[in-house]
Length: 98
Image (cartoon, rainbow, N blue to C red; front, top):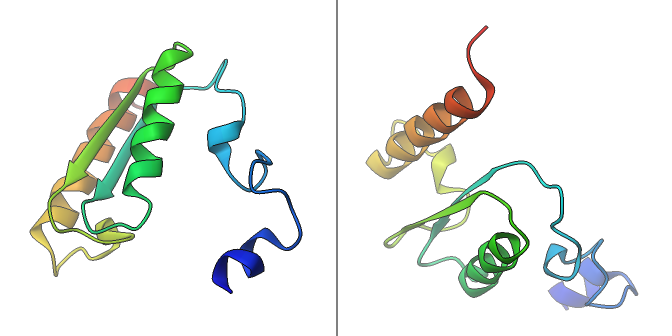
């Protein structure tokens, strides 16, 4: 039911519902943080592989035991704080400072 609700009549291979089926050409650098308990872990890995194959600067960090949106748990999970530090460093390196 959940997938049917999400798709809302769209083809599952439509890039608007699954970026795995879209073009990665020209994308800016990507940093991904995903937990091993995430249902879409395999899709996340495939996304990173597809982006890399099309020349995108992509790094995927896989966090043992973490679930969906774990970086939002700052103050509760050490991994959340570490991931946010990595994201801040990534952005600083890619965007520079003001």
